Length: 113
Image (cartoon, rainbow, N blue to C red; front, side, top):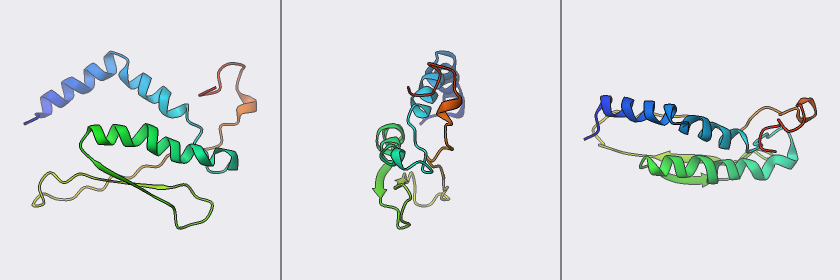
């Protein structure tokens, strides 16, 4: 069984060895801005290519659903039941970022470009 100390050690190593910075760079490189119609495909890509594999490695079962509200990106559901007798925890997150204001970035610094 995994321990709290083991989890803290793995998290520290992940951060110290640059894993967190690499992960964050990959996530922000996907322009998942729902306010800009040209980025609609990126909303799905963010969930399928960035978030789903990460959750699956932690033992979650993943399902993607179309949003019932027109003009909004898909919804990801992730389930992991360790023991039905334990309390349920709900985690919420989304890939909808704010407009990147690309024109205001210095040349070569716009995330993901």
